[in-house]
Image (cartoon, rainbow, N blue to C red):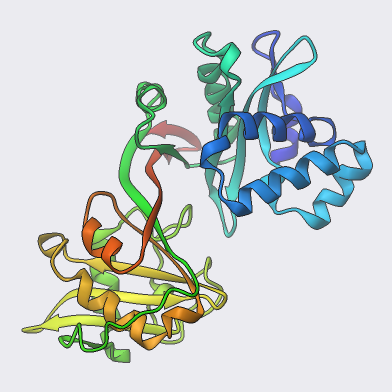
Length: 329
């Protein structure tokens, strides 16, 4: 269905056309690198280099990319082309396991071509394409300080859901916080519904971008779609019959911490949960990543060896189906 929609996608202006990964991959990689140079992490920079290399060998590179690169390197969406040069890009992908949830990414316009309405036209075309392909929600992320982009998306019906900072604690950094977090304990298997209820209250938009919140992240034998396996560790702060906070540890090489704290206690009890987790996983032997609400527990996280990477606002445009048609919420 999606391929048919893209094939029928109209070129609403001379510069706008559907992306063709077989011939656009190298130029899109150049544009992404130019536009987001300071914001690309190691994984993204590696993917951009591979996109550029494979894109330079034409259809053979495109065929190899289907084997070697993640789906994000072969998106749907649109480019803006002028004088045979790609100066704009907006990429689209359905979320794995959730075909009616789509993600818009890499909305980029070359600095020399900004303030001409190119981004708005690409986003509008991408939004229309995703809905025609069956999307009921389209999500995207924006740097929290990019006021122009936030204004554009708000004007097009996107709502801000949350702003989160990605924190990283490097491998090799020692931890000597034994003794802290004495009020924190291991979660019992029977307590997972309380942890799920806390997640629904604290983070209804989801835990790991761009996947929806799922109870499988917390069930003793459950498997979250993103993580692919049950958590290695669940710690909780539980008092007077109430779950105040939890920390789950996922992953092997890079450990991902999922930290949830009752809004009334945010900034107050994170240290105990983090201290217990760092002590139990032998923190010096692994790299740790954590997404947490921006501007919360900042000094605590810095004091425990975490460093800010970037802060992103999560946004979404949602639709509801009514008698076979799509209407906006």
